[in-house]
Length: 312
Ligand code: DHB
Image (cartoon, rainbow, N blue to C red; front, side, top):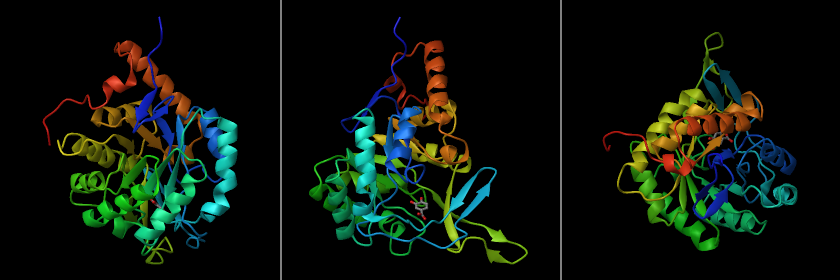
């Protein structure tokens, strides 16, 4: 008998399995992203790239908790041109076996669109708009919390690139459905839910915020119930018909299935990779396969949105 099928299609892109390496984790180089694929990832997202290089914030820019990580890196990156060799190396190593999505950002809608155009020329399979970085003034969150700006931003990026465009949503909002709908109105091909949650840590001895940036983005297990709720609300709104990639605090197969049952077609894994190692992909795949055999489920896609319950 054939085993359960883990492959998924999201916005017309095929992934051998629904586990994607999230942006900003183990994606410094083409080799590190290819290693994630060798270890079982179905696809990868690049670090967030701007048209021009950026230094990022001074240390300390990371705080660890038992239940998550708070970071304010400040979107350091070598710029699209400076990263092009990494994409090339990734593509030549993986030979089309696992799609690469480029995360982009800018300080204006025009800059976002230019970054998207430049990464498209590198041969990536899709663009992920990071419209929700909590840490860089003038970059990110003020784009990602305003439905009118989201719509214009997505429209401009869509007008620039012919490849699928995903919009990554912030959980820091009063209505995740309104933000998702705005991305849909702009012509997004899919959504990523969710980015990190703005948060902070204070040192009680120095009475100072620990991060130089004062606030940062919280990821990891603490974020998971928030992300699951967001995916569920979007998928059950009756208003948004885009595929959703779930993200936020996934480290086990149960976590991944929660997101899928909430309505995600695939998921991204970040903090669990930072914390442990790349084994997480094969462990989650194994757990999902065992579950599917026990529950007699042939395809992972049969479980998308299968959580029972009232519509929200
Ligand atoms: C950073 C960017 C993000 O999109 C995020 O969610 C957290 C941190 C950063 O580079 O500071």
